[in-house]
Length: 156
Image 1 (tube, rainbow, N blue to C red):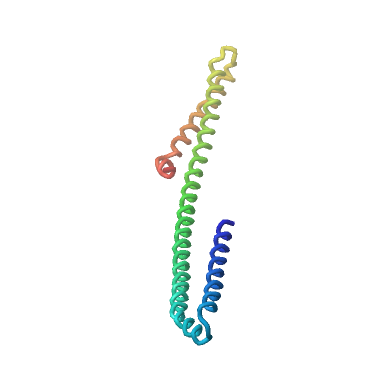
Image 2: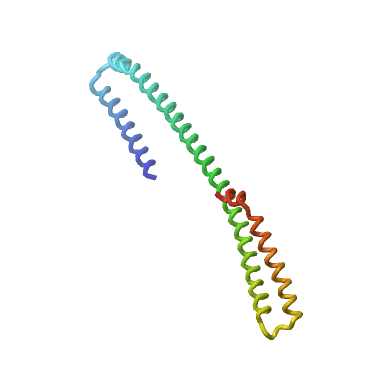
């Protein structure tokens, strides 16, 4: 909104100067021959200002092109950053799943250890708990071996 006010102020100032110059020319120059000669003096000024306006338009186009290229570079950098963040998050998700599984298996091992240590457990229940504990330890071992150095490097 502020830019629009500035534009109108400049436009009104130019219009006022133009009308004022016309009034001064009519007041100080008596006949049309003198007025025509005086107006011809500004023909080259018109060409100069037209050329400067055209140069300004070309410069504006050049600046806009540079801005578009910078925006394109920023968008590409953001896309690369998002891809990297997605890879990191996928690796973290995989690690969290394995950690959760390990915690669950650890809780199972504690449960089986309590059954084995419980003096009221039957012999059959103790044997079954020992077998399940061995299976749980084997599963923990498989998970730890699956999570090798390549997967750790992929997270970085």
